[in-house]
Length: 378
Ligand SMILES: Cc1ncc(COP(=O)(O)O)c(C=O)c1O
Image 1 (cartoon, rainbow, N blue to C red):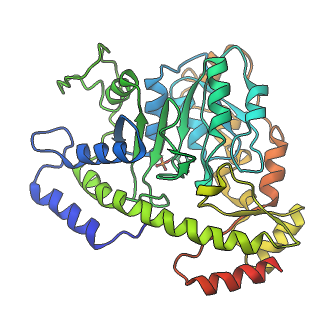
Image 2 (image 1 turned 90 degrees about the horizontal axis):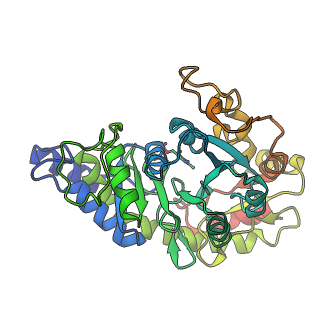
């Protein structure tokens, strides 16, 4: 994540000094300017800032008209929000295996499509982009909506595009762990006018008092309040300027470490869907035991199997199909029985058992990290 400091403090102070913190009000401009700047940067016609990445996913699903009876394909390795978001609009998540790239497996997407599948949420996990070429081809073939979960990959490139601006809609998160960090926040990205208006309506209780001129004949409908304040908009403008310099440093460091780690006889470097732009680095050990040994003895960071609610086996409310009210239960509206079990995505578990994500150590100089990488590798 980029550093947060003096410039964000000044930006937040300016917004407070203006004395106008609501994003839709006379003289409000910080959030709107951030949206324009992010859209220009990643090539999305519309950006809508919301209060979290989870809200961005829910608003995107609502914008696309996903609802009861619909099935949404989500990877078995992602933060639980990706699987919970469809439930909030009355649809059910169907779990898809990942492959060694740590992202949703296009072959398993094909296997999981049913007549009720309406959308795919590919997740660009730990800054590793999905195989978007394959995913978009499958989606077009089967007439499915693609909502990219780019919460963990803000500003990351996939070939000549940016994660989150390739599918029909995209979701960003700006929480503390993300590439742009303001504590909490998110954004919906889309190039589709109607999807944008619907997302805007949903995030602002129908936006019925706003008088937006660009309504594209979409009627207002009941929604939530997912809006942000101008303080968040002002801080995000600063964070946006920091993201590409950060990713460039990550790319350089990643290349250096990958070169060293790829010489190891103990493991291989995780394959990547766009090696030329790679900013994420993990290793894949031959066995679970070898991965555990690497984490414990060689000081490699974080075996992915231990990453809590990023692993589907820890999504207890989803596996139990439990919602706040029994009659507001998406699984009751599904057009076929949807069952989950702990071993349903065994391939994902095997990969997560054997994968360790490598901290790029940007706070340390190159020689220190090169020395550590050699120690790990040999
Ligand atoms: C892959 C993924 N999707 C969705 C989210 C939800 O974002 P937020 O925490 O901003 O609601 C996260 C956040 O951790 C995430 O990592």
